[in-house]
Image: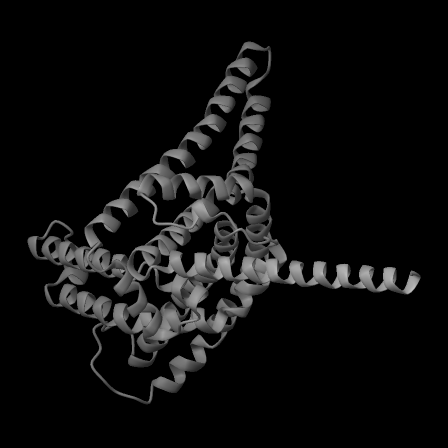
Length: 346
């Protein structure tokens, strides 16, 4: 463990450290994401298929109930079943994304603390932490779903769904308020999943820990969020633009060669098909950077707010002292054995 790295860092130092950790473990994190995405896509497909299969059953079951219905062309059971399915799909998406973060957070944590990093351990931890991840999603849902429902109800009351006028002053005002609330809540709860992973916190305890870490640093962390998002966008599109330049050069070369239009169109189509898997592969190497950065930012906030860096240093010194004592005991025991052997020889 490097003691110098376990300390409060500036934004630039956190970003530099994130790039260094990412560079060091890029193969591990890319392999983790590849295997996780493979498993996650299959699991998500099965879950969503099960949700669609139960849609008709839920609609028939709920048709016996009566209640207010915003959508006159749909019965109450269909509305409730469809709403439940939408919530379930969003739940699966959030579970997939948050569980993905868990493994990368494990890699980043061990990279920061100088521990051994293995992708199979990260993958195992991701699935092991599913219960705590679900608890955080439920806590998010309890907060965000009512806000979204109120926003949708207000839009309905001002006739947005009937007239669909996005330039209506009421729609614009409500949208601004909703976006402001969403940004505020997303910022104060930005460390919830990391607190759940590292500190084994569940439900609102994880959200409250994030709120404590963000307290008094809201605007700074919001600015960091925006700035780092722009950095990731710039990196992503700069890499993708390289593919565009290469494709353009190949197109110019092909146009310069005596080739018929049908063959050229076929080659362009093949190139477009190949571009998607290439972009997916590139994303496996770029995506971990964001999760690593926010993991280190989470630790940095704990260093500031809790003096957690001091606790880590003390723990490291304690381990080092115990190792020194162990070495001294082994040395003393070895010397004692040599002395006894010499006495017997005399």
